Length: 96
Ligand SMILES: [Cu+2]
Image (cartoon, rainbow, N blue to C red; front, side, top):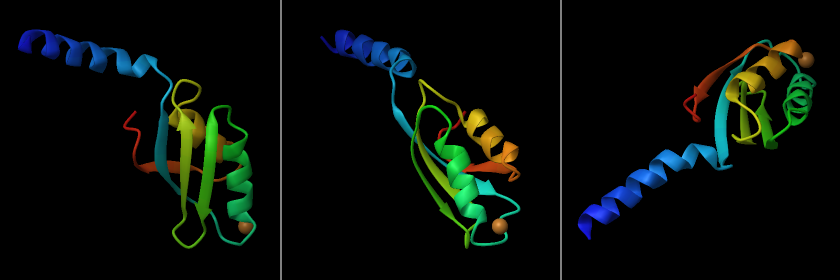
């Protein structure tokens, strides 16, 4: 019985990445200098398919993004901000 539970736990771990799961990532966004910048960044991130929520802080120069990892990747998010003129790097979360 114990062995069976272990196997089940392993199977769950292996299967997990195939399921759609909401992920949260915090990005450090450079070049935000005025009140309009966060709006541009937020719009750029919101347009990425799979993004569920975006909040951008001008004070912290950070964007927090909730996204579906079956539809998009952190790389696509950082590319979106860079394309809008604000290169970003991952601060924490999503580990990929
Ligand atoms: Cu600005």
